[in-house]
Length: 386
Image (tube, rainbow, N blue to C red; front, top):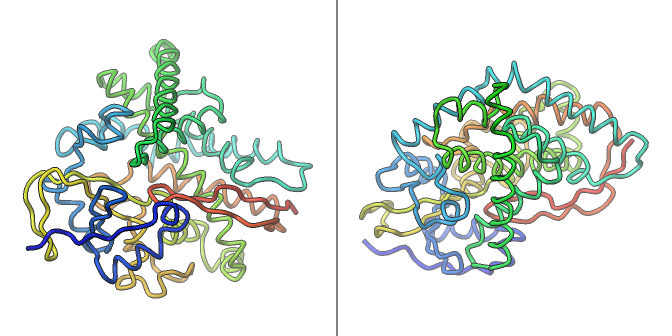
């Protein structure tokens, strides 16, 4: 069988809007090598859905990968029993029951405090002034790193995800990532004694009590921060933007014909906050007419899968009437996002309904630029509060 065909992209254009290039790949080369990224991209939903589960070939273990090098070997970079063991240790902090019984009330407390602090303002940036602190405060509670401020939590998360997507090898981006991981390590060290004396449901407390090695605790908390800040932040603001730019869809929610959960799930399909997940080919393999060679870097493009025209009718449209059952915004295999329940509660049960209840006349005050392809979201969102 042939090797994957080459499909060059303009990196800057791909960062600003990856969807045209991904649509072209799905149509002409659904499994393609993108030289600018140094990786083979899988872009069709069904290919990704099947291949992600084949961990013997599409391995998450990437000793030389950016995430492992920069953040340590977390559970997302392990397969099989090693992954499952750490995932089970993390579960008591992130299970739907824990989120509902322990975290939801704290999410709402922080959200209401954020809303109260904005009372009296006429215009805000919904990303920086609302979505960011809500996401960061939730993550401070869940990780146990309450000694980081919301702004610090946001900054270290952004530095890490920029580092993990730094396939161009920018030394300044790498340096910021190293500084962020050092700051997280220091915050962990400062909190260890407190969580030992007063155990709680935070990841730091749960993982240390489970006997997980401190190096793994550090890596797994960094993992939680790297995805647990930007994804809810971008989805809160992004879903609000989607509803404000589709007033008929917003009216469906307000009329009870669709739920806030549907609004979020459809947004996560339409503009996936986490656009891809990397894999390493562990052995020679042939799939869909293409040969994969060992040690090839592969990107499973969730953002493309969620716009696959063969799966979703009118895939480029935001439509709350559609079923998102086949969307894979949180992944599809054994590495399905461990924080999915927390994200769903925070975004759909707390942040969105409280926002639109407080300001029913909320409206956009200017353009909303988006950026990113590995991680994607609104960069700023000026709104008028009314």
